[in-house]
Length: 106
Image (cartoon, rainbow, N blue to C red; front, side):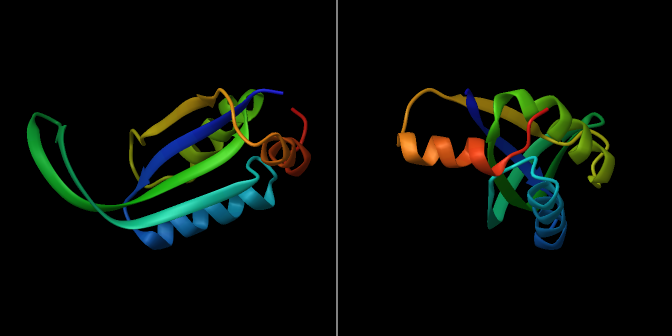
C-alpha cells in the first residue's frame, strides 16, 4: 500500500475544518492536520497578492489522491486550489497500516 501526504491551502480555518471533516467522514483520508496563520505571497491574475491562509495536510492512500483532489476542488473557495500530493517513502509501519485501515478502497 502506497501512502501520501497531501498539502493544501485554504482561505480560512473554517474552510479548512469543513474540508477536513468531509474528507475524514468520506474516508478519503485517515487524518487531517490544520495549521492557521500562514502568510502567503503569490502571483494571481497578473499581480502579486498577500493573504492569510490555513494549511491543511492530510494522510491518505496514494490511490485515493485523484478522488480526494476532485472532492476538494468541488468544495474549495479558490478557483485553482493548491492540492499537492507527496509520497510517503518510509515510516512507522503501524502508522502506515493505520492509514490503510482507516481509508476506503477505491
